[in-house]
Image (cartoon, rainbow, N blue to C red; front, side, top):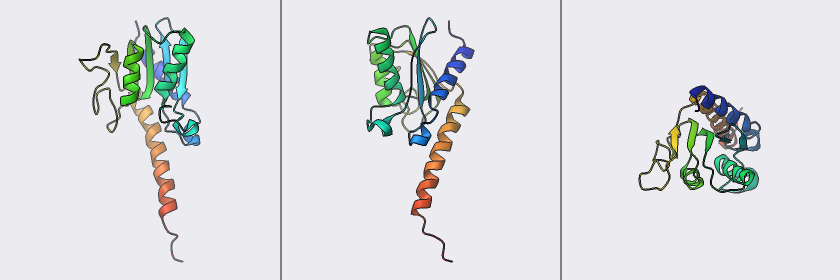
Length: 166
């Protein structure tokens, strides 16, 4: 049985996965797929910018790698840990992959589909509904994103702002 301390530790691994992502222009989101026996099957960070691929979210990349590692598309017995609440695309992929649990850090009130904007993961008409736990190491995960977007806005403002008359 996974404990809250285990969840916090695995979210820490997802946080480690984003090292260098922001410097590459990627939204710093990391994901880790862990089998019930404690094996890490896959670790990934967003690569949408680097791969020029709108589907290269950390969750999707981690699911692809985990499926390759086990030789099976069904990831029953697995938990996906991710630093940000999954979007609609990622939530759909998690349902289709049949993961048992989804644990995430920061809530996403703009695109989150695990309870914020909608709830694809627990939709009653779907044939699979993983258990969901949100807000694990929320402050730390949220701060990473806040810092990234503040820096991005600052860079955009410095480009758009005319030099002071002098």
